[in-house]
Length: 127
Image (cartoon, rainbow, N blue to C red):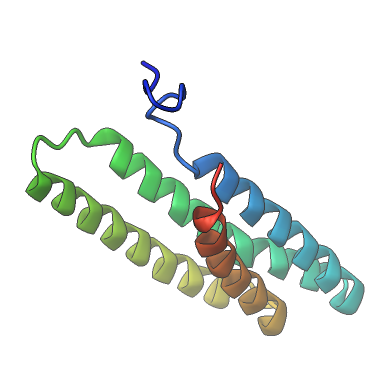
């Protein structure tokens, strides 16, 4: 159902834009890591970006499942989704750092931090 003021659907969230920017940033850092450190650098860059892409997808999934009927319900949904996102990020960071012995820490954390920053920037950009 379109919004009568703008003619757009009220369900236009920046999800695609955020995920797209994160994917592009991840690819750029992975390529740069590949040039500097070979395959281990490229894989580390991809893993660093995937941590935030997966956490963002989980956040969107949890929010999408909810149908809060009140402001309190909306807050509970937001806190629940954010908690799941944080737990998933911590778990994935731990998983990569313990299971991938060839991780290039500089590239891995650069991709992770840049995708966090890109998320905030992409949300601020208007359609």
